[in-house]
Image 1 (cartoon, rainbow, N blue to C red):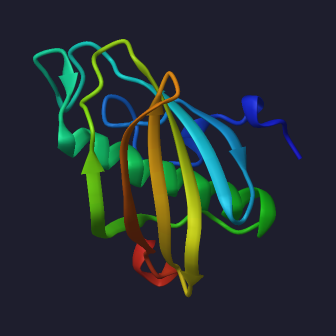
Image 2: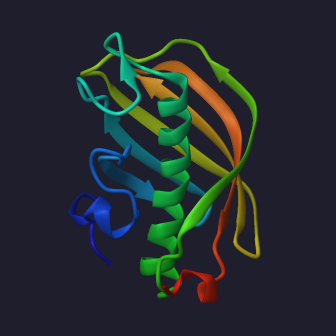
Length: 147
């Protein structure tokens, strides 16, 4: 198995710059994942030099997606499925991160049943909690992915 720092994030996520909100996978197993993202100046969802709430939620969803992509490729040895954000609950945003700040995000699986993942996601900036919530994502059925 490859060390996490050697895994290109673009193999785990269908989103590509400028709409990719995960730079690096730090750790992953079937219950937990950790990712990093540096907020780009002038990036998508960045206004007034701050990542807007929609961008923060997108980052949290992509953290879940990076986890499911890693599990598909490196643990279950299956193709990566396209995923969808289905539900966000208990979302708390304590502050919006500024351009140039590096986010460290932790994903903790609550349930993973038939391609539907419910996870507790916590976002930190320099060990300061800046957001948290529970996200539900779903993987598309494989027969729906083919063009």
